[in-house]
Length: 305
Ligand SMILES: Nc1ncnc2c1ncn2[C@@H]1O[C@H](COP(=O)(O)OP(=O)(O)O)[C@@H](O)[C@H]1O
Ligand SMILES: [Mg+2]
Image 1: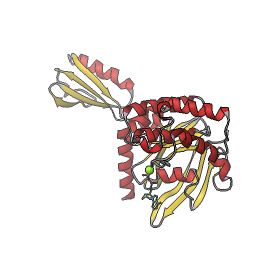
Image 2 (image 1 turned 90 degrees about the horizontal axis):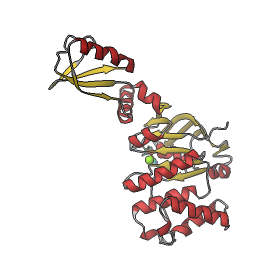
Image 3 (image 1 turned 30 degrees about the vertical axis):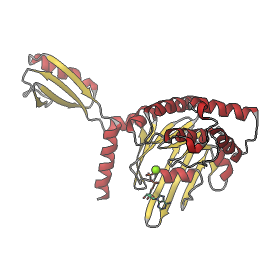
Image 4 (image 1 turned 120 degrees about the vertical axis):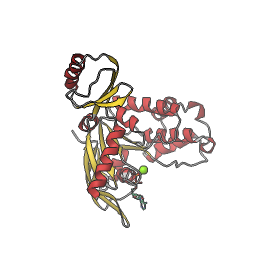
């Protein structure tokens, strides 16, 4: 099957800044893909290049098999981008803005166009604001319109660049519900976000960029597993200092054990029982994506020297 997004050795410089350094990966159709990295990593540059707004110096980009450079119009039609920055024309209403956007993609006046616009407005809770001028909308509402604009031409690939930066919880939930529905219906979703718990819960696979380089590319599951420093904390008044498995006392009866496989827990508990311990409390801590991200970024600093 044709990749939804194909990135081959993409390189981009802005003066002395290497914003993208030979980035290469594919995103499969139907994936919910996360593009993560600290500020300045190159995420927006990559997204802008996919949308044809930035020209890469070398390499190749394709959206649904269409080359972004040689087949620009076809590639652009396959892609809906929710930009990081709020840009809009203040003099039009929400509905006019969406109709104009449809026009850019050659979608003229039709009942199908209007009912799709109604549906988008409804799903983003924008219906009450449909006839309001853009300049009268709050920041959160404007962001909803940006999302609506990206969807108006029904693109198979939807890219969201920090769509929830600084927006309220309510919009986040509305937005994610709608995006999930689109993903279930077969749309490919590419997301950048600062909220790593969002990425962890939603993305099948994740690429991490740092200073223009790709430093990780894997399934979310593997990223979490690979950095497995799982810990078991438990509270008992038995003395576990002689126990095999090296428990660390934490005070007040708490002990902490590191483990890799869950199968290690049972023998550990059996040892505690053999030592005459009764377990008063117990908790297991799994690494989350935030910890994985911080670790990968740190390792990269050491590599960079
Ligand atoms: N138009 C531009 N002119 C000069 N430098 C730019 C431009 N756009 C981005 N950069 C630089 O390229 C790097 C990557 O930026 P960007 O893609 O916006 O990162 P991110 O979205 O991951 O925060 C940064 O160092 C940024 O300053
Ligand atoms: Mg950015």
